[in-house]
Image (cartoon, rainbow, N blue to C red; front, side):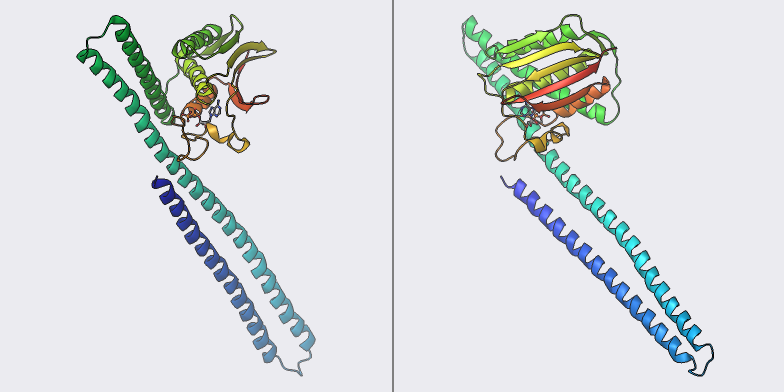
Length: 327
Ligand code: ADP
C-alpha cells in the first residue's frame, strides 16, 4: 500500500522544484530586460549631455539618439520574446517528458508486481496439486480433476511467458517474422474452441466466415485473438455472452470481439494500448493482468499491416476491431 504514495510525493516534489526553477528563470529574464532598458536610457542620457545646445545640427543629433534608443528597445524586446518563446517551448517539452517518464516507471513497477503475482499463483497451485497427487491415494476422477487444474495453470504460465518474451523481442527489434498464407477463419475458430475448453461456462457466440486467408504468422495471430478473448472474459461478468465475428466487408477483413463488460472510459481508450498501462488505480483494481496484452495486440496488428481499434459496445461493454486489408 505504501509505494503509490511515495510515487505521488516524488511527483509533487519534482513538480515543485521544476516550477520554482522555471519561475526563477523567468524572473531573472525579466530582470535582465529591465536592466538593459535602464542602461539604454542611461546611454541616451549621456549622449544627450554631450551635445552642445549651440550646435547647428542639434535637432538632427537628438533625433539620431532617439532613433538609436528606440531601435535598441525594439531589439531587446524582439530577441527577448524569441528567447522566451524557445525557453518556454523547451520547458513544456521537458515537463511533459518528465511526467511521461514518471508515469512509465510507475507502470513498470506495477508490471513487476503484477508479473510476480501472476507467476507465483500458477506455480503455487500446480505445486499444491502435484503434492496432493503424490501424497494421497485419490480415485481416478479426483486425479483427473487435479491434473486438469494443473494443466490449466501451466497454460496460463505459458501464455504469460510468451507475452513477456514477445514484448521484449519486439522492443529490441529482434523479432523475425515468418509470414505465410494463413487460413484466418480456421485459426479464429480454433482459438474460440480452445477458449471454450478453458471456460466452458461462458457463452461464446461466433460468426466466422469460411475461407478467409491472410499473409501472416500463425503464432502472432493466435496471441492476438487469445489476448482479445481473454480480456473480454476478464472484464465482463461471467453470465454475459462474448461475440466473435470474422467477415469480409468490401476491401477489408474485419475481426471483432464484443463483450458486455465494464467498458473503457473515454480518456483511457488510447492509453490502454501503451505498454504496462492498466485502467484505474493499482490499489483498488481487482483484476489480474500485466498491461502487456493490448500493447502486443497493437504491435501484432501493425506487423500485419492491420489496425486495432476499440469503441464502446451499444449499451454496455467494448468492441475491439481488427481490420486487415483484403488483397
Ligand atoms: P491486462 O493484462 O491488464 O489485461 P491489457 O494490455 O490486455 O492488460 O489491457 C490493458 C487494460 O485495458 C486492462 O488493464 C483493462 O483495464 C483494459 N481493458 C482491456 N480489455 C478490456 C475490455 N474488454 N473491457 C474493459 N477493459 C478492458
